[in-house]
Structure formats: structure tokens, C-alpha cells
Length: 463
Image 1 (cartoon, rainbow, N blue to C red):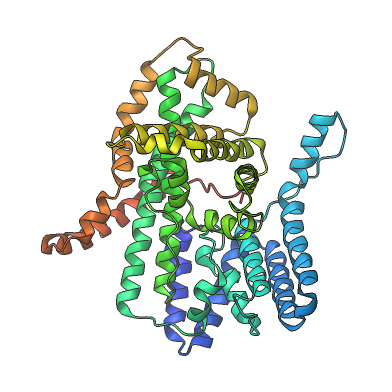
Image 2: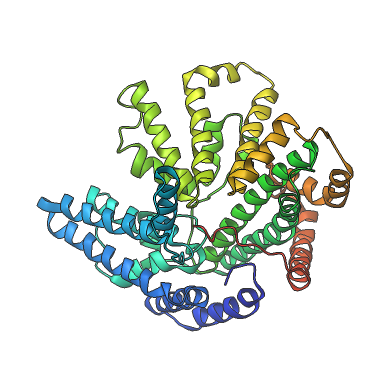
């Protein structure tokens, strides 16, 4: 079950909200959310519920041992890291590494087919951050296992993020206010996310799916770049939409989650892009990998090595395929180039136009790499993008797809800038009257699309 499904919108969410409002007291409300979260996960992953619950119990117990036995806390931290990364390796990377070893060393290892539990990377990273924070002494071990259970399994952020740190919502679990204004703000944020996912991400994403499903030997250069642009817009609006919906759902139940995206496509460098893109993931790697490796405190060479390690892991986190690793290293390369002095050159551009062009070029090209897992197809696609091997700049297929989807593309481009934020910040009586109508219209159109269209992909099944 995903947020952009009719089952969630018209059945699951209304029932959860009704029970949540019916019960009084924070303990009862937390119990409702825990039960709802387990049911939500079990709806699509009935067997994986046991795996998630085992992960929660182990991490809860190890955090308690770290708190109780400070003299040997490192032992328990190592056990926690091994258990969590081992869980990820077994379910997410076993087949990938076996297949890679067969290709590299001409081996004949049987490649196991292991079903990947949805959201395993998200709940594993949250569990690890909690245990590490207890080890560092920045967060006390939580004695109530129900609090850790709610923190890790909470359904708004369980399968598509954002990655929430325990100390960010620790107090909210035990004490929070559920007000009408907060609930209304949450509903608006959820509806805005639903609109972004269903009406924008799905429509521009359909262009990408059509192009990549066609014969690479016949597409034009313009078609290839159109596809890469549409996928870049799709993944941003899809991912930020799920973050919007998660933040909105959190507000409906009295929780305040940190923002996960901050208009990354207006960035003037790749370093700035990663301060704006998937903020919860980039800060997680910064706090729990980059800084422990030494960060930028041990000289330039070590800093560059640390950056490449972080971006390698960032790419691999997104999926068990080498194209994700290449995507991560692509961003790592430009992050290092900028640190070597290229960023100073960019800053000399007073208009920032060239900075934006450079950043978008790197990002859009990177997402073409991210979006195609088959190396043969990826090689062909990039050859068309950069060498025009088919010898056709633009063709009728490009004009047809552009003409039929230009409205969604333009809307996506506009909403990927802070224009909407600037509008809603302004005190405007007309806007206050029109806003509810626009939200209702957006909701109605979204539901109509979900009823009539069969294209509603969930991009995070690899996570």
C-alpha cells in the first residue's frame, strides 16, 4: 500500500484518523499509530513485518546494553552495526555481489533470489542512527520499547522516508499537541504531495518510460535529452511528493518532521545540490560516515577519499546495481572538482546562469545513468545524448511527445522553483479564498487520474 493509492486515501487513512481522534491520552494514541503502522507494512510485506520487528527489538536491546555498560559500549556498537549492515547485505546485496563476482572472476556462484523488503534501507538507517547516538551519548537509551517501535515503524516515513533521527522526535513521541490548525496544515501538505506525485511525476515519468522502452537505435538526440529531463523531473516530484505526504501525515498526528527537499534544481553547484536534495540522507551520511572517516580534518587527499567513499555508499544505498554506484561516483567526482577550485570559478559568474547550466547538466546526465540499470541500454542511451550516433537531432516522435506533454513539463519546471512558496507567503485575501478551491480541484483530478490510469509507479521498491 502506498500513499497515492485509493486504498490508502479512502480506507486506511480515514480509519486511522478516526481511531486516533477517538482515543484519548498519548499512550492510547501511540498504540493506535503502532497498530496502524504494522498493518500498513503488512499490507504489502506480510512476511517482512517479522524482520522489521526483530530489527527493532535487537536495536532497542543493544542501545540499552550500551547505556548500561559504558566500559564495553564499543563491543555492542560493533554488534549493532554488523547486524544492521548484515541485514541490508543479505536481503539487498547478496544477489548483486554474487552476480558481480561471477562476471568479474568468471565464477559460477549460484545467484540467490531474495525478496527485498520494501523500505528496509530506511528503517535500518533509522535504527542505526538511534544506536550510534546512544553510543555517542547525544541521546539517552529509551527504556520504553513501544517508543522505539513507533519511531522506526511509523507508517508516514516507513517505506519512502524521510530518514528521521530519534532525537528529532523523541519529545514528540511522549508529548505532542494535535490541533485543528495543525491537522488542517497536514491535510494541505498531504494533498499538495499527492498532486505532485499523481498529476506531475506520473505524467512526466510516462514520457521517460515510453522513450526507454523504444528502440535505442532509432531515437533522436532531442528525444534522449527530453527523456533524461523528464526522468529528472519525475524522480524529484515523486520523491519530494512522498516527503510532502509524510510531513503532512506527521502533522495530522502532531509530529513535525524536518524538510527533506529545498528546491535542489535551483542550485548553482553540485555541493549546493546535495545540501538541497534528499537532505535527510545526505545529513545521515555526513554525520554517521563522512565525519567519522575524518571529514575534511585530515588534509585534502583524505577529504577527497572520504567524499568518494560517501558517494559510493550513497549510490549503492539507492539500489543493488552498478549504475547507482556510477551515479554516486559521478556526483562525487564533481564534488571533488569543485573543492579543487572549480567552485571558485563558478562564483565569479555574477549572473549565475552558467552555474545553473553546469549544475543541471551534471544532474540530468546523472539521472540518465541512475534510471537505466541495463548497461547495454545505458551505453546506447548516453551515446545518443552526447554523440548523436543515430544522426538525428530531432524527429516526429520527439515533437509528438513534447507537444502532448508540454503542459506537465512546464508545470513541473515552474514548481521546481520557489515560485509557489513565494506566492503562498504573501498575505492575499483572494489567495485565501481561491486556495481551498485549488486544493479540492487538485484532489479531484488526482483521484480521477488514479481511477482512470494504470501508470502509478513506486520508485522506491529498491530501497
